[in-house]
Amino acid sequence: MIRSALMNVMTAAAMKAGRGLKRDFGEVENLQVSVKGPGDFVTAADRRAEKTLFEELSRARPGYCFLMEESGAVEGADKSHVWHIDPLDGTSNFLHGIPIFAVSVALERDGQIVAGLVYNPASDDLYVAEKGQGAFHNNRRMRVAARRTLAESMVACGIPPLAGLAHHARFQVELAAVMAKVGNIRRLGAAALDLAMVASGRCDGYWERGIQTWDIAAGVILVKEAGGFVTDLSGGPDMLTKSEICAGNEAIHRQLLDLLRKA
Ligand code: IPD
Ligand code: CA
View 1 (cartoon, rainbow, N blue to C red):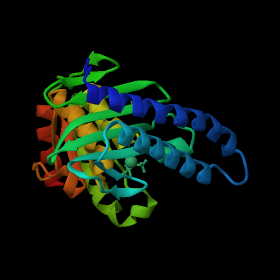
View 2: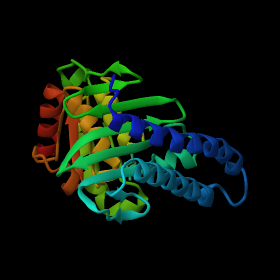
View 3: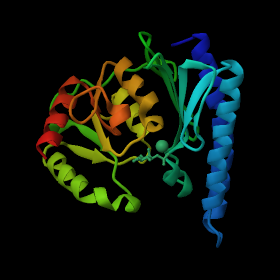
View 4: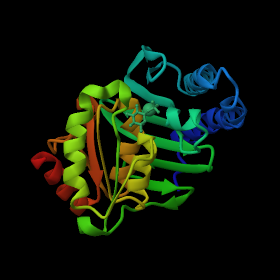
C-alpha cells in the first residue's frame, strides 16, 4: 500500500468529505418520496463535499491551485501544483438513491498527474495510485484484467444524457459497433468508478466522450499504475484536454480503440 505523506493527506480529505456524503445519501432516500424531491439537497451535499476537500487540502498543502467541478479554477501561489477535484462523481446515481458514486481527487505536478484517489463512501471502497508506486484497492495491489479477447470482455461506457442530445447519434453508432464485438457493456454512471473498475480488473475497457478532467484525472493514474493503457480516442495522450477517453488493458484498449475509430 502507499503510505506517503501526500496520500495520507488525500485520503484524510476524501474520507472526511465521504463521511458527509454518506450521511447525506441516507437523507436522499427520505427526500425521494417528498413532493419537492432531493434536487436542491443533492446540490448542497455536492457543494459541502467540495468545500471540505478544498479546506482540508488547502490546509495541508497551502498555495496549490484547484480545478473543481462546482467552483471551477482557484488560483494558488504555487502554479506547479493543481488539485483536480470531483466531490461527487455519479451525481445522478446519488440523486436516485443508487449507491454508485465517488469522491475523486487527483494531483497534477508540473503538468503531469502524479497521484489519484477515488473513494466510494457507500461501499467504503478506496482506490489510490501514485506515479511509480503502483495502484491499490483497499490496500491491496490492483492489476488490470488479463483477458485478451473482446468476446470475453466487460466494457464500461458513458451515455450522453438528455441534455447532450446532440451527441446521441454518434454514441449510438459507437455503441452498435462495440456491442457487436464485446461480451458485455455496462453504464455505471460515475466515470471515476468506471476507471477504478478497469484498474481493478473487473472491467476490461471503458470509453466515453464529453468527459471533464475532474471526472477522469484520478482514474487515469489508477489505470496506468495498474498496468493499463489510457488514451484519447485517437490513441494520443490528450484525454484530459480533448474530453474523450479510452482505457483498458493493452489488448482490449487497442481493440476497443480500433472499433471506435472505424465506427
Ligand atoms: C458524470 C459521471 C458520468 C459521466 C458524465 C459525468 P457527475 O459526472 O461521471 O458517469 O457519464 O459525463 O459528467 O455529473 O456525476 O459528477
Ligand atoms: Ca463527475
